[in-house]
Image (cartoon, rainbow, N blue to C red; front, side, top):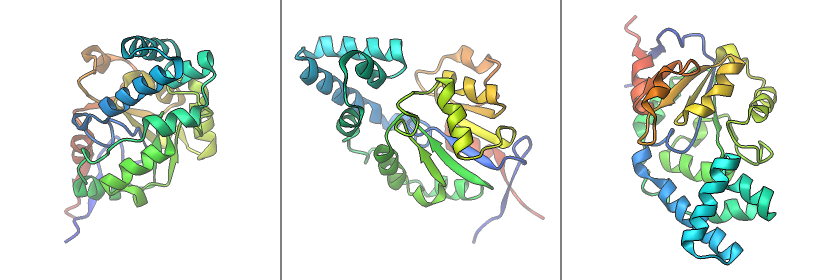
Length: 229
């Protein structure tokens, strides 16, 4: 039996739901990033002819200086981005369990559902297929669609809003990285931070963080209430 569920305030007027992918749509405990991290190190080691220790140093340096390792490799090493993305996202997604509960909750959200990720389209499709939620989404905006400009650079957010004709005041963005919510807040969206192990507690009190949850399912359970009418 399908139970009708409605949205609680302040989300009852929302008609566009924007989700980050990694560590947001699925729990961070699945730890897909450890696989991606290893493959980034291998790519850099092979590309530059350095050992894994030096490759990791370069990887993290580029991440902190450019927002993503890819952006640093493009700027400093002339790396072809699609070759990098294809290599690092060639991972096993089976640590993610299929989630009928997530599918059920997402299906009750009115309006459009979009994914906005710094990853690739292929990676997003693999993850969403594993979760069993692909058909519930109206679009995936990946790093290629952002012209390789990673979140939280504000310009791709502007392009994203124009492309999908989003009315920010009626949109919510859900992310596991608090800095990536700042441009969404500045555009007028509601923001939701999903806590992870790398979460900084003081981020809860930052002005651009409107709501905080321990995981996506927890948040959806809180905002979707059974309609007893």
